[in-house]
Amino acid sequence: MKIFLETKRLIIKAPELDDLDKIYMLDSDPDVMRYIGDGLPRSKEESRNWYEKSINHFEKYGFSFGLVFEKETGEFVGRAGINYNAYDDTQADIEIGYRVLKKFWNKGYATELAAALMQWGFNNTKIEKLCGFAHPDNKYSRRVLEKVGMQLIGLDEYAEEEIIRYEILKHDFMENEGKKYDLIAKGFADLRDSFATEQKYIDLFMQYLNPGSHILDVGCGSGFPIASYLLDHGFEVTGVDASKELLRIAKEKCPTMKQIYGDIRKVNIIDKFDGIIEWWCFFHLPKEDHEKMIYRIADWLKPNGILEFTSGDTEFESKDSAMLNQELCFYSLHPDLYEKALKENGFQILLKEYDQDQHLVWIARKIT
Image 1 (cartoon, one colour):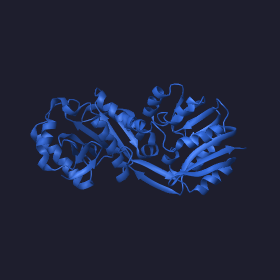
Image 2 (cartoon, helix red, strand yellow):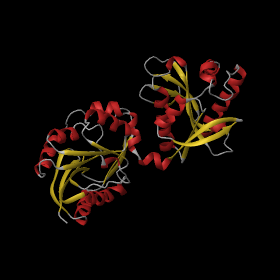
Image 3 (tube, one colour):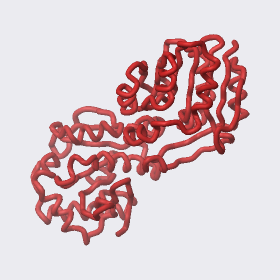
Image 4 (cartoon, helix red, strand yellow):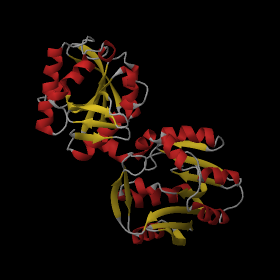
């Protein structure tokens, strides 16, 4: 088996003519084909013609619609991939597509496949935009495209059939890790239900604040363990995060925490805070944004306000899929640049120390 891509539960195999019977089984299923093309099952000859285009596309570009199998059972699940729309490379649209046998519906497989293909396409090719197309009545497929972060463009037409068009630009996808956390929100919330090294430093942070102070938790996630701990100690907490799904969980776990949804580099925050805490959030911002965030935070803090944040102990940039098999980007500046940004924005550094290998905790007071 020539594996093209793996997800947590699935394998996408490169298309090969030996698998035509599996493709025909999928293409001849009325339920699967209901919202595809003219809505009719394909004959074996039609199925072969389309599949040969898929094989040729893969040989030419290194990506196409492949065959999907369950890792655990080895069962054939369906098809998924990215390709020039209808395998026509004389036009610019490159689409994400998926087609799953009915017995595997309602397992989240289409979303898992679409998210993985989007990441692969933007990380491994020069593709700058991906499209998704769905029949107007196919609410399930539309929900998948929306869930992985595609934007609704509107009505379009293909082969004289009306379709709904979605798009996402590489720039928009790469810069917002919140959408990636949407895909692993429940698993991540389960992992972050207790402290690692944070409690000592949150206790120190609280010592600088008056009882009942208003704190902004930057990258609050599900609210656990940091926001919940602050709330339990009588502080007023506002949390900001770019993941809608994590904020939904936070609403259940920390109902008294005020919420702000948005990218912390762009979101409009009007309130002024006595303290701002950030833990493992800046790591997901490109390096050019870190110093800008110190400036933004200085504006959000009241005079004598306290900032606690985390960084690496050297400049770095990397990608890692260790978190629930979800690829995430990680960045840090050299500590000297954080010191410079803090001083330029009127901060006095109160603490800079390791809480674990290669990981620094900072506490600073806004004095001007």
